[in-house]
Image (tube, rainbow, N blue to C red; front, side, top):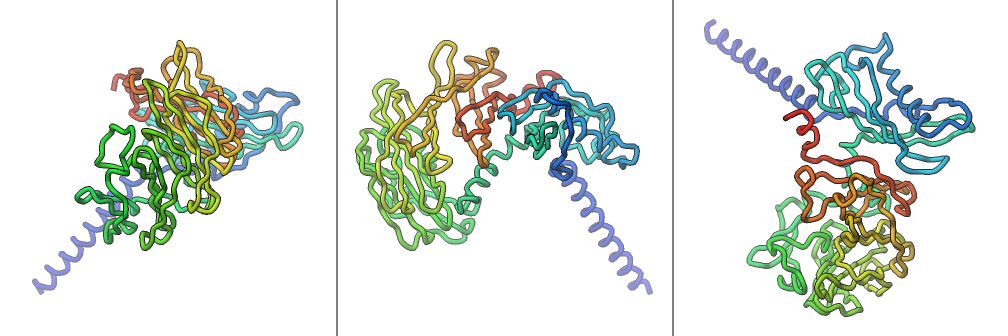
Length: 432
């Protein structure tokens, strides 16, 4: 009897332990990783007065959205009280489709256990302040507007790669994965497609991956100069003068070397991307003299087997970034110029043959602070671009960036908000 009783209590203890661990895991997941789907109740449509301003339309839609959580019938976990906005601003768009930025605060009845806890930091009194959302709005009638999408600022920033990958997926491109990576044993490049279980040697000389005007670390591939996916693996290689693309479409079983037809002395920046199965682009910069250099764009329409020179931006400044969002449309960033320093950004709509300068409207209070435009990412016509502080930036530690949005494939941009990856602005205000 004693043996049976002992076994019985052991089973009960084991079951209780498992239940406790499962509960603890669920709590940790809920508090740390759960993010509410803000778009579950959308689309939401309101009727307005004739010729109301877009800010007023944005307020009406935000107010209607908040109302669903203020009803007496709303359960405690979703209940909010006293929502109040501090700022509503039109960010970009036209009369029919536009984006509105709203900054607001709410009280959540359930505190940190509220389903809205992912909206921001929840104080002990249940207050969430400085919530920043972007509302995507479409005019659906003479006095009717529909809220189609909400993007919280933080998830928009954190989700920049997913937005880019979403665009690539629509073009039939395999997106990067943590299982697709590389290593340099004895300065010989190898790649893996299954998180390191198997490795495939790449037939390229180590020095050709870094030759030219490159002075960075050589224990990692140059950012932007390669693609590693099961369906396409590609590396830009150079001897400092002649350059080529080494590609495989069968996970390294066979390789094809394609020469880039133009010669550029002292290759510095090297960037490669594909916007569809067949359409790809390479951007090279080089020939640097002091703070001046040239740049060339190459394109392919057969998946990278052959490349042609199409042009280059008519700018002699040092290239800081670039790439294409479609076969025709691409961007090149050239740091900053002027006093105060302002971003220099160029855009092409014909595969790099011709380029036009794009205005980046940095607000007056931030001019000379946010100076270098990064490569924008797009989902259809809607784009997000971050502008950083450059290598010498020291505003709030130098990591804060300005976020801009576009609704016309990058032809024009509007300032949206600041991006604070290290939460320094909040800490500065609250002494944390």
